[in-house]
Image (cartoon, rainbow, N blue to C red; front, top):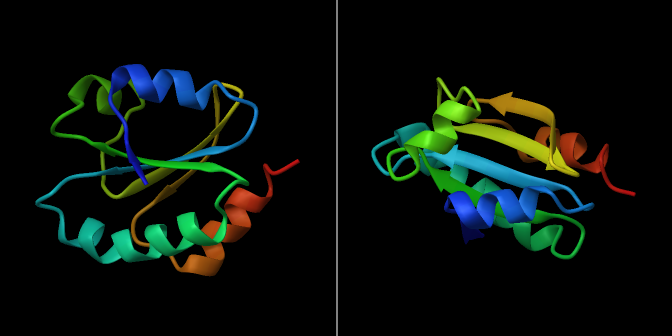
Length: 104
């Protein structure tokens, strides 16, 4: 998974295939629990969607811009627009189902 900064984030979310962004922090235990699930989904769906992470401590402006108040927060973008948001640790099937809604 790509570690997004402000520049790479804006460029990637504007594409026509879904971009799945995991907002997280290094000190967040639920984020650490959720990370392997996201890695597995990223591997399974390689080529169907972009996957990346935003460290809310490193990229505070992005976190504020998207009103990230709890982590982990997973946001699905397509064509530059936020399509769906999942807050908290989720099961793999639930995340995959959310992403699949935005695949062409």
